[in-house]
Image 1 (cartoon, rainbow, N blue to C red):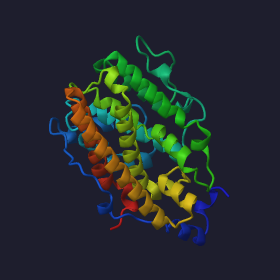
Image 2 (image 1 turned 90 degrees about the vertical axis):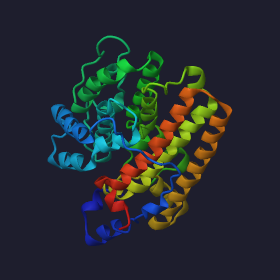
Image 3 (image 1 turned 180 degrees about the horizontal axis):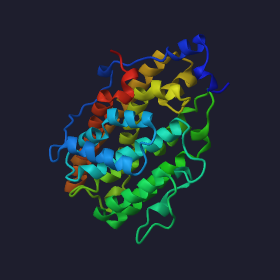
Length: 331
């Protein structure tokens, strides 16, 4: 049975309401957050709204209302607290969330969507190799022209690869599945590391002066393992706090739903299991980041790791304050 029945009878709606809520105090994070004080977040919100309207990203009144309440400028201020050009980071986060909502809510275009790949819109040199035809791809091509100049070429190459992996993840059979069955844990975790787009966001930490990692360090196994742990923490936190929203749109690619399906537990138990799984991963990340810092004296690596910790704490803080996730939080 598929998800067409979510607009059905009272019994079916009551089943939906059994999706549990989480006490925010259960979401453990050992790192402090900071809010960007270099630029007015209110000004960023205004400019961000104008940019999104310019590219037709807010044409649906429901999306426009949700956009204002989400405060993506505030999100950027919390996850990139040291960025002097905060607006471009806020645009990137906005683009990711709007693209994600298109697919979560079955509004993605059948032709010209990002699931076919986006490298042609992200040229290393010269103009785009392909003319964008949808609001999301037009906005992406424009945003690339803002993001790219401040990146060393090797970082640009890595970032665009990660963007393409993110975009193509929506075209996978697992992502496109719309049944009432959650995927297995292993395939889900692998998909989530691409579909969450966190790799792109971690790359943008290196766009900031003093945090760029030369390839020898960026490609080292302990650094890649640390990135993978941070990716899981950020994505699983989002899963815990977005489960009600996603189930309403027939999306079972969520850690809570995966654990519920794998073990046969109820929603509340699955939510608590996912929360504990996230805490275990956070403890692992903390041990590994301490070991990396103790074994290395590279200034850029220290700055990058600080950026990861700020992303973890800032993302959690934004999720807890955003109306996007309010219905998954216990009052």
